[in-house]
Length: 175
Image (cartoon, rainbow, N blue to C red; front, side, top):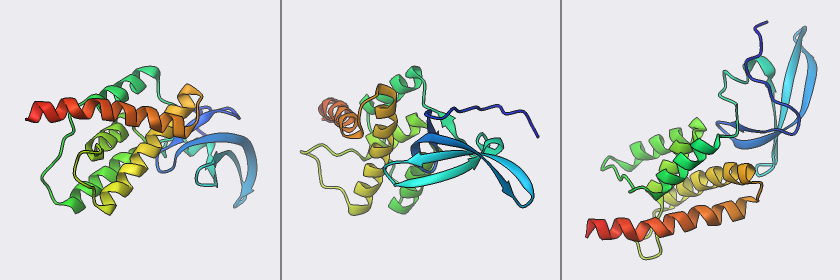
């Protein structure tokens, strides 16, 4: 067995790339196929889901601790930046957005949130754009909430406030 590079304790918030922010609720030892396995038991409240991750596979699947304050500041700066709208087909952009969300990288998720944000005075989004925006902003809000010890709705309000403050500046710059 290799030495554990990552170590999480019961009660720690962790980010699992495909599912977002969860909490380590238990460390278990189980016999599986004749082998003793140590498992992190993660609870994702929003999805009402429990996930068991072998401790020796945690790093391989991209499980990580919450982002640092520096990464959070970088993500917030990204939200304030000018949206980058590519002129490629929607299906290709949608795949890129989904990949960024599932990467678990806070700054990439902030990019998707910023790029798909629509202020009240902007044209309506398509249903699929709205779905991806909500997935990205929710994932971002959950990590922000865990880091700032608040709840997801409050964190989402903060994100939307940042986006709404930045949107008029970018609209003027284009005019």
